Image (cartoon, rainbow, N blue to C red):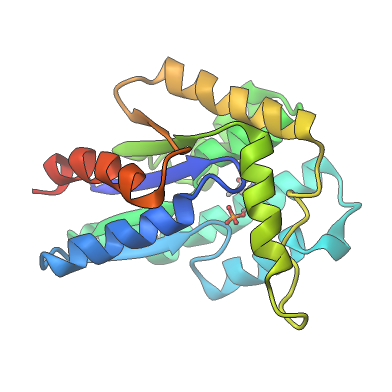
Length: 213
Ligand code: TMP
């Protein structure tokens, strides 16, 4: 079974910190692990990330935005994820197809049946073995995310196009994630992301270890 594990959640839920802690933890025990992210993960994906997350792209349509995320995923799966899985590495990925369903489907209101087919096409039908969903009210997540962005140096590109969406948008994304998780309970582990990072990581580690050992 491919050990492809994804980390999902709304802005400021702490998943990026948790995936790094998980990567360090597994590497420390000698387990071969690859950490990657969407959009990103490949040179092509990083270019798309710059287009789609930068605040200067504010007026792109929902459809154009969707196709950019899918395009980045199509390249990511074929260039990086599948080859790593073939080499029996564990792949930890910061966001994947569930993000498209939650943000473009539930958040933007695009047709979720169509998205399911498009996700499968882009991902060559690859599905995560397990998905950690870091759940948290948007007010808390957004204030954490905004604090992080305000601390960035002036010359750092501002990847805050989604953080600038309304709280109502982020509520729909959160509800979308919870709905997707409810429909696929064997794959999802829902983690309360409100406690401190170490308490959250204790929950991640206890679920992660049986998957990889
Ligand atoms: P992050 O890497 O900091 O979490 O930022 C990625 C942003 O892109 C986040 O706001 C969610 C959004 N996104 C989508 O809207 N659809 C997708 O398919 C993916 C992968 C990300």
